[in-house]
Amino acid sequence: MNSLYHLGKYVMMIGQIFSAPERWSMYYKETMRQMNDIGVGSLIIISVIALFIGAVTAVQFSYQLEMSFVPKYYIGYILRDSMIIELAPTLSALMLAGKVGSNIASELGSMRSSEQIDALDIMGVNTISYLVGPKIIAAMLMFPLLVILAAALGIFGGYIATLGSSIPPSDYIRGLSYWFVPFNVVMMLIKAVVFAFIVSSVSCYQGYYVKGGALEIAQASTRAVVNSSILILVSDFFLAKLLL
Amino acid sequence: MIQLVDIRKSFGEVEVLKGISTTFDAGKCSLIIGSSGSGKTVLMKCMVGLFEVTSGKVMYGDNNFSEMSKAVRKPIRQEIGMLFQGSALFDSMTTEENVRFPLDMFTKLTTKEKENRVNMCLERVGLEGANEKYPSEISGGMMKRVGIARAIVLEPKYLFCDEPNSGLDPKTSIKIDQLITEITIENNITTIINTHDMNSVMEMGHQVTFLNQGLKEWEGSKDEILHSDNAFLNEFIFASKFLQELRKA
Image (cartoon, rainbow over all chains, first blue to last red; front, side, top):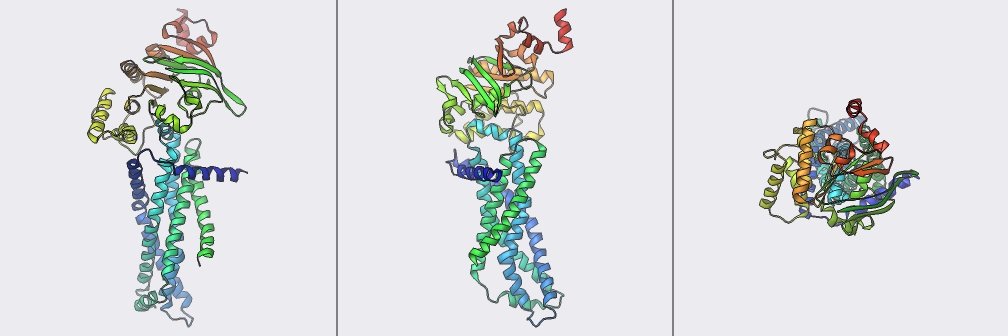
């Protein structure tokens, strides 16, 4: 019953985002601010993680393929597809659920507890449309760019891992160019957009409806990360079933 | 003018406001006083539409605000300014951006006109030159002043202040009270203030409404309040030992 209540409230919140803005320029400005926070603010963490995930994946494949008859250049091929289909969108989204999701939930939560949302309401601003809408749009625009960067850096990380290892870098590069399916990139971008919507909307919901003070804001922030992460993994499964 | 007609508000089984009727006039500071839990904040939130009343009417002039839909309320909302207990300034914006926000959102003024209006409001509250400071960089008293500047920037007809002196020292409190009174009279605003600070009552109580457990227990002016024979009111006003001694003397 409680889950149904929250689901209904969540759907109603999403519905209210689409009401006409009081002033487009203010919404545009807020969307740009959010794009900067979400996109530029996440560049370093996404880059570092993608680089190492790529490198570790290459080392582990290399270890697994060592005693087999599978050609070495397969590592490049497997790593490329793993990064594009799964690792870049899913791991990036899980990381961003932690960073962006908790940030959104705590920002809205503290705006609620310090009566900033009430102040906007009294002025006549549609607070859901103004505060939630730009965050979701910004996430849906920035996540795909971050995921493309993560995929590229992951593949580059794999290349770095081959330097000085038993796999010749030329074999790795050869593997990268084999059996490339462009649809995999489309799938990666679809996943990025869906995950962006999940992380931003779930976190906004948790933050916007906070009641209480510091403790409740922290709890909402945790719920935002946990619920987003679970929903990312569940939707990842359904997207894979649907798209592959 | 704001008129309240038999306002009732319940949360579940608990009735917090039990039929409050009164009128707040333009150009006057009307104070709502009462101890914690008496229903002051709920009443104010009902008046500004943050809570919906269970029954009764909130009339802004001839408009029944409590029966209006959200969309119809918008023009009236833009005539309302509110100063919050904690100031409720937007953390990510500077003082100037905070004050300019309602102008950016609801007016079609040019950048120059907005700048002039913001500077005029900041000057009015004694904060000229503080345009680039963030809320985290200014004192509690300054935050209240910025809150007042933001509340009056659209030249409201109605000004609501929730505990404007909470957390301020007595000297700063008096300055804030005087500022609110001056602005109210200068601009013929209907100002409603929630407070439990007796200094504020004596400073600006053109009209004082005393709430006790969700009921309007007493109403009068600051000149009448000290001579009232209402037991609940006297218990509230003369709560401190110092004032009890003073009264006896």
